[in-house]
Length: 295
Image (cartoon, rainbow, N blue to C red):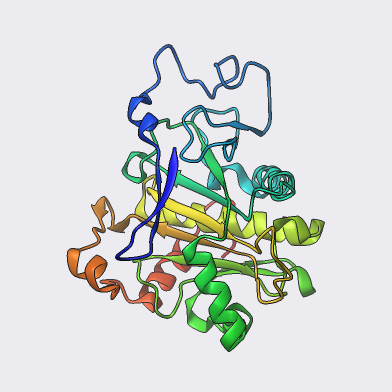
């Protein structure tokens, strides 16, 4: 594995040709179920080093959300997601303490359309040597202009909220979201990373995340493929007073079963075209109530 920088765009690329050999589908049963090759013993949540890493030196980990093969992150409920949040925070601390790691990115690709080759509920963690371009850009803008998340007032674009006083988390559709039904989840209080969250803030994050993901599935009446990632302060080179921890969710559908494809004009220009008005997306998700969901 080598890390290269494209001379034209400045993009960083990890060339990991060994991943071409990884199996698309496991043989001999699910490796993430209890008793499988990656989970020989019973567990509630579990993390381990990825056998097919995109980055070397044990920088890539898999996180198992539940031993239940048919579960989903949103379907775990607030208590189940809280166990995942705690593991995310634990691994952020452990990986971030390494002197060769500058940034810890937590993420999930849900569904085959998002590239997940195993349907068992799981996500991943990548630990980068430096701060990647996207979170670095957010940090730079916040340093220059102030924290956009603290200034956010979602109003009619608010989808979900949980917690009390300074432990509140909110989920909303951004005013200029480039993605149909794209969402941002953030604490009302300016907190830098997952390990900093206290019990009340972790409970609120878990509740909002479980509710928001469940609303997506109810709105589309299906298991919606999505990508989820968490941006937090870098682990080296601080202090980072502008960092405000937050999660972003990008569903891959623009309608039930209808893929949202990113066009050449969008990739070639950096200008995205969203066919769903963010106010309408938020209204649809707010209306997607059901058992276990707040009204």
